[in-house]
Image (tube, rainbow, N blue to C red; front, top):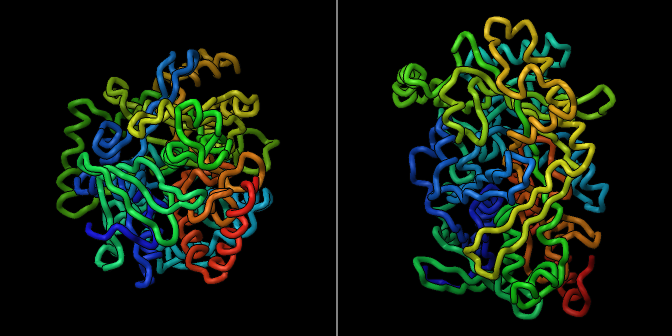
Length: 554
């Protein structure tokens, strides 16, 4: 790379950064540089949908974060927090589930003083981003870069789950992203022709031929550069060599809910007291940076299977997979061409709840600790995961030091609000109701966890904590709004700073009801329109003028 000046510098080539790179570079008058800390996505394992668990062990393609340990959660061990570190970010290593969430999620954002972020405003961006296998209609697009497909091959146990939910009295739906959100059914996935269709494949790679787009991999961003309170560039390190690049128009921070607040704080934007503690010069005192962390806290029911027709890592189980291996490499079909998380549900934890407040992921194997519990995987069984969709507990992301390479400190503060506890425990009861339905009679063996003898709310809660996990949806740490803890405004501009936006899951005021990859892509689609809009440029000029003479608007 010879040029040190670009119109836009995008930090992070994940679900937001890749979308922005594609859309902004469509205008040949824009020059764009994307800086990605991870390597290129060259491994063939990324392409194989059924191989996503491989990345739970990969230091090359995964940040492998851990949360701060809590004595009564997972017996004092940290909760594992995987995040993608390659072109495509977490869309290169996730389970590929395509979920938008409930319309009330976005209407709530708008009600918090964020005009233009209601569901009716966001639906066109979801449709713009996708080509859905089912075709275009009122809810789905058919001309977007992101391919969204149905599940074509399933384990018999998945049918048992959906039938069991219906037998237990819960609704069934054939489209979680359509008119009926509530119910049990099959998920759709970002899979095309038997291969993962993450944002690298859908958005970034098709734009790489453009002369105005440059991508630097293994470029570790040290900090954003400022002149006063104006972002003017980025300092990064590659192969041990320090570089500085200038942004003529804007710096767009797309590092995700962990790395974006970290980069802001390292650059001098954040809680003044924390920055001073680490000897970082304060550019702008924004106490909300790194606060408001939300995640879908998750617990599970583990049941042994009598029929042994799911997946296990026993010698016989692996031998049974051999035909699928040959089938996949021969025709890109079979179980390896699909995610293992094919069936699930959005349900109400109690009759009093108005909107589904729990999500379920059913898997035909014994799955805990992100699939890293190999002893458990070696047994035959099935797992029903339950997560709290709208948690009230709030955590933090903070610095350990001023060293950019020092891992961040993640404190989820899980289950510190009574409502979260009630929702999770009731959700486990709903899961048990489904798993005891007639549909599972031929399969049902011993309930390994929580255990048939565990019935009281107090005992269930502790069992949940013993195997507590998450669904890899961190969000909210640079939230959008205008209250004292907001970090960005409704056009995703950092308060009190010129020419700097944050565009990723960190801007969510509240986490969406479901998997967050599709919402982040839609956020980036909307952000690209905001950035490219002539009306926005006028608004930006006015805001820049005010920011130059005023304190941050909080």
